[in-house]
Length: 169
Image 1 (spheres, one colour):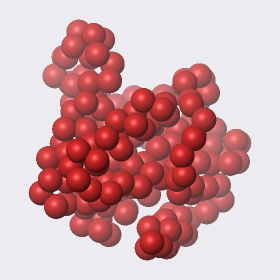
Image 2 (cartoon, rainbow, N blue to C red):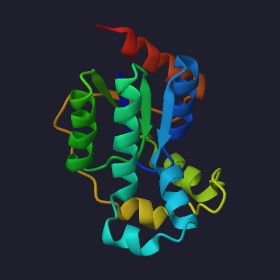
Image 3 (tube, rainbow, N blue to C red):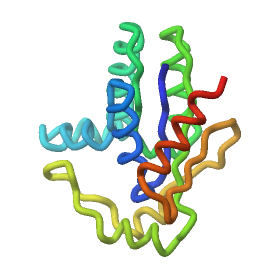
Image 4 (spheres, rainbow, N blue to C red):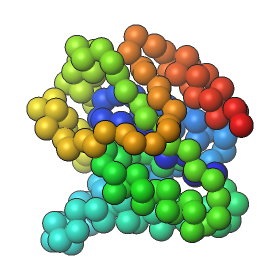
């Protein structure tokens, strides 16, 4: 199965995705990690030519692992329709199911505080500012998905909600 995460920076998506992957012994693919490796490799010209390169690499890695029968947890902002469709196409091409998980923080003040106080957990990575988060392009959802609201909730509570939703047929 491909579990496709989406959500703005600072909502808690990486924490939930990482914990889920660990609990499922799944492959964990994080776009921020891939993009930081590209930046560290001084592939700036390549990335400028194709700003979706990190996603393309993640799609290929996900497909390889799905074909091996592994569950894959994909962690990305995934804010626009084209990336959401591409993730689903990866699962379809591998002949496996996919589920989409949107992580939100409905408390704007809490979300802003998280963004403004974040400490990068990837060496060299500079998290976006609140202004950059607010300015991100975001397409409305048109498909069913699991929605996890992290406002005022613990990681454990969010993970329990997600696991319960994933267990439903």
